[in-house]
Every structure is written in structure tokens, then in C-alpha cells.
Image (cartoon, rainbow, N blue to C red):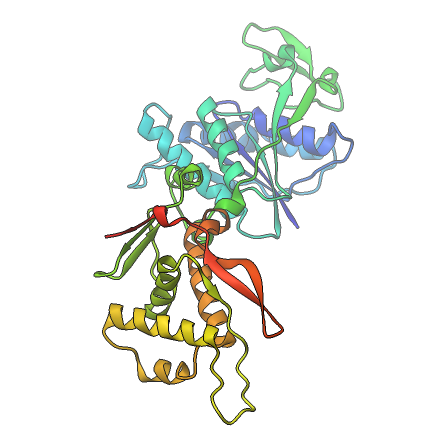
Length: 380
């Protein structure tokens, strides 16, 4: 599994080396976590600090050498710029619009890294403006999986103040090395060995609430948050039979013709339907049952209301009633489409599901209904 360390930074690039030290060299729990890759999201000014102080002045490479750490992929390709919609790189975050761009960038980077189970993501929220840390934490809460982690690095104040651009503090060194602050006060970086702490931050994982399309495709931070907020709203259905459109939780569901008719059956019959038996293909005569005939009659009626006519193939297959194979196939198709659009959690009250069972001629038949109430359905 590929281990990825992601940080949001501002004008303090030492956050990268301090966090890496806390993870790989002197971890709180005693188990080193060495990333295969390090990625940083920042403004242009922040990324220039990374280039100058970690790359050009070699503070990052020196940390690897001092503690015999393996090679870690961290170069220009790992720097993620915050850009405007027309591609201009932001030098700083000064306006609400700039903050929104930062949120979208962070959200998309985290979505990408969590899109494959082969990645293990560790997000540090120690650097950058407070809003950037908030966005990173919230984005990980939206997309994070079981294997993903979040932390904040803490450094004793006297070492934190040694922030000289050239000879400042970047990590505890194995040997004596004087580091300086702006007032010329010096400390020995070697003495900071036990003065860096990595605070693991627990977070609520909301990924399973998101629709599959949101996990697979780019969305703005605000759009994803809006989807989560919809979970607190009461279920509601709007149906327009003239335009043959249906909205679940204000989301348009693009059912095909038979799926639309099948779902409409359940929206207009709140008692539900008893699942039909399997069709006995060995019998020469057509063996209809009350359950299979009721389903077929109501389905054909809805199809004719919506589309004036039903195709010959469907009519022929339902001539003896709607049996288990057709019923299950249609039911699965409808529920799959709803889950794809709304996500597993939000979709629950809208799904066609078993609510109880009846014994019919020795058969344990399920009674299928939708979970929403009649008062929550509006026909336009």
C-alpha cells in the first residue's frame, strides 16, 4: 500500500520536516510511519518557500541523510498550486473567493488520493492559514477511509521561535547544530529530540454518505458539503407524470421508461406489493398467481398512462404475470439508480425494500414498499 503524506502549508515550510520527523523518526506510538510520497497544497508564495528552503537549501534531503531514511518522492510534481478558474496561481488568500478556491483545491486533491484502496493517506493540518487547515480536515472527513489519518505537529516554543530563513529550526538533529531566531537567540537543534509531538486528530468519516458519482468526479467543496447537509432534511418526492420526471430529495433521478413506471407503482400503492414466485418453466400452461397478476396489471397500467403504449416484447413477457426474475431485476435497477444519485445513507427511505413477510401456499413471500410516507410525495 502506497503511503502518502499531505500537508497544507503557508510561509513555514519547516512544517514538512517537523511532521516527517514526528512520523518517521521519533513517533509518539513507537511505530515509524515512512511515507512513499509527500505532497503539499499552498499558494505560490508558500510553495516558493518549499522550493527555496527545503529543496534548494536541502533541509529536506539533510533530514533523510541524518536519519538514514529511504528515498521519499518529494519534488516539483508534488506541489499543488491554488489557482483561479483561468489558471492564475494565487500568491495569498485574501478574499472569500480565494478561500473558496483553496477549499476546492484541497478537496479535489484529497478526493483523488482517497479514490483508490491502494493508498494510505496521512493529512497534516499544522501549516497554512487556519482556514486551510479547516478545509483539509473537513475534506478528509468527507472522503477519508479506515486507513487514513490526520495529525497536527506541535513544537516547543523556544525551537519554534528559531525561524531564521537560513539557519532556522527544521527538525531535531542527531548531532549538535545551532539554530537561530530573528532576535539572534540560538538553540541546539539536538536538544529538540523530545520536544516535537505529533497530535493524532480523530475525525468522523462521512464517505459512505456520499453518492458514488461524488466519489468519482470533481465537485466543489460547497457542493459536497451541501450533499452531506441534505441528510438532515426530511425525505421528499416530487413527481411530474407529464414530463416523466421524478425528484428525490431535490435530485432528479433519470429512470428509464420501465423503471419509472415500476417505481411509480410503489409511490401510488402504499400498501406495497407481495413478491411473486419463480415462474415454473416446466409447465406447459401459463401459471399466473394473484401476486404476479397484480404486479403485471399495475405495471402495464402505469406504462400505458405514461407512454400511451407498452412494447410488444414486455407485454408478451408479462402475459402470464410478473414473476420473480422480472420483479427482482426491475427492483434492483431502480434501487441501484437511486443509490448512485443519492448515496447509500440518503437513499434509504426511497428504496423499494422488504418490510415484512407473508406465508402464501407454503412460500415465504416478502412484502415490498418504499419507506417514505404518502404525505412526503407531491404529484405536480
